[in-house]
Every structure is written in structure tokens, then in C-alpha cells.
Image (tube, rainbow, N blue to C red; front, side, top):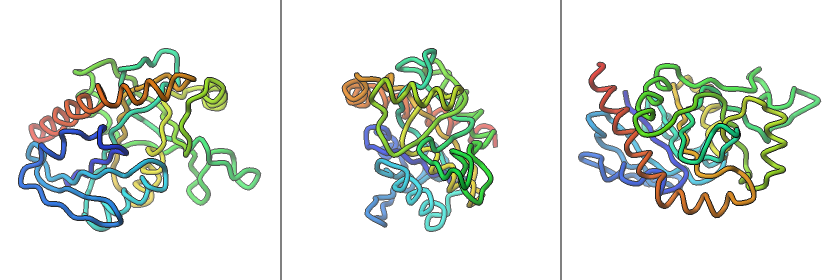
Length: 233
């Protein structure tokens, strides 16, 4: 395994780069990629920046230039369900681009020429990440929706929930990474810590949470995931 670890913001990946053994850095496409051994796993860590295009570009480069064989996206998200609370973790089983609509040419949410509106994560990666996350906090598994907008109004999340009743979390990158990995045949997983309720208080809650909790959760989960993978091979 050569593992690519993507986050949108530095706080979401804090500590992971420092944990790399024999690190090396390469700047490409205005991003700094840091490689090395992460708890005995060959890994490359990178910040994608925010949004679907940025995430898709980063995932593509990880595969094509750095030769990663598996990708994990770790970061924060807004809650998409009343049972998903701040501090919980959502591990995606499938992802959808909630702002994609090529109708009437294609059904809403369907990505043209793929025949898919939802992209499934890799089962083995998802199982191991969920097991690692369950040692940190409460875990939910299901559908995450991505779009190029910060969901910070109650009306926005209500509309998304009406269109996607099984929605668990909303963010801005995961489904783009999912499409890239699907098209390149690369196993991937997405894990998100809930930072806010995607309502009118979301912006304030998001900034506080990402500075105080998100980095610790991500570090703990990825450490357990890597160590368990090494034990299992």
C-alpha cells in the first residue's frame, strides 16, 4: 500500500506530517506533498485546499505523479441528520455531488457518462477506518454529500435533506475525490468529524471546532488505522 492522505485545511491534518519518518517534500501544482513512512506505511500527505476542483486535482496528482494506491480524505463536515451530533464521526459508504444537476439531459445528481449519482467507497478501507474511529467517538456510516458551497443556513440543509433523505453529512470535497478514484480505479475512503450543524451558527462553530478538536481526532484515527493495517498484513 502507498497511502495518500488528503485534507482541505492544515488543522484537519495537524500532526500527521510531523509523524512521518524520513520525510521528503515536493511542491507541485501549488501544493506541498510530504512523503515518508507513517507508522510503517508508505504515505504521502497533502492539503487539497477547499472545493471540489481543488480536491479532484489533488487526488489525480497523488495517483498519477506519486503512485499512491489508496486514498483517504480526512476532515470536518456539517451534520446532515438530527441524530448526527457535533463531535461524532461520519465514515462515508457513498458520496454524491449535491450541487450537480445536468437535468433534463441526465437525472439530478447523476454524473454524465458514469451512470452514477453516488460513488461507493472501498469496503475494506471503510471498515478499518470505522473501527479505528469507534475508539475515539460515536461513528455513523452512510451517505455524505459534497458541493461548492458552505452550508451555513438552516434552509439549505433542510432542502438538501428533502432531496437526499439518507444524508448524514455535508462538506465540499469528498465526492470529487470519489469520482476521480472511481475513474482511476483507486480504492478510497472518506472520514469526517462533525464540526457544526450546518445551520445559522455553522460558521462560528466550524472555526472553533476545527482549531480545538478536528486535528486530534484525525491524528488518532489515522494512527490506529495505519497500525491495524500493518498488523493485518
